[in-house]
Length: 234
Image 1 (cartoon, rainbow, N blue to C red):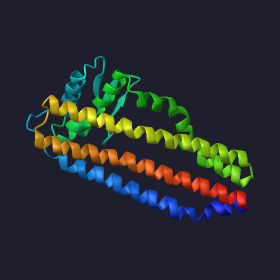
Image 2: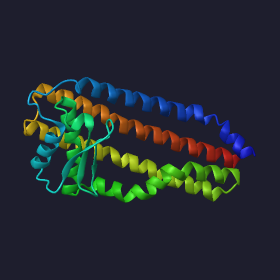
Image 3: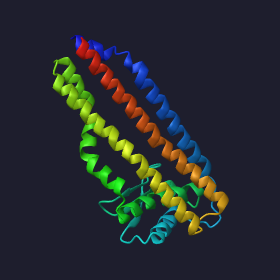
Image 4: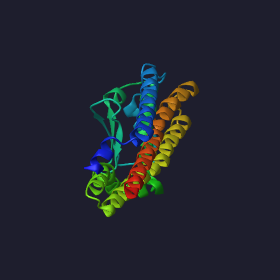
């Protein structure tokens, strides 16, 4: 099948996919490097991640949110459905600069939900279709090319565009959560000024992984558009 041959030996793989992988690897290396560095530096107050999360919740007047331990490394997240902040084993009981920053960031997400932060509402509304787009769009485009169903190619591209839009909207959500975290840490005096600088570096490195994800997704979208355009010409 010529469509399958075109997909398997697609030169756009070199143009779009490999750069996206390199960018993602660099971003992941950055966050792991910052985390390793500041997860070995104990904060002077001896405040654990779990305690920091609770303090940030109190700072923003957020009630009804619990803090739990979860397995894994850097698996920290806020679950808005269950109103739970889940902190990884290296953050929950750890009294390091990195732990405070990460825990405060997740509590910053809880504050967003409590305030009715608009971008997070938009992101949640997009999630179902974005999840389908990120999972199935490439298969839909491939089937459309193989069987010359142009409408399927277009549907796949539209679905993947929704996934890209979801990631773009995620950027202000993540940056705002970090801003909430830094403000609470600073004004509540959870860390010293020097320690706060280290915590900011961890949060910035984590934010860059989301930026890298957006760039990678945009490159993937450009690849799909290039493949579809070339297929139409064929």
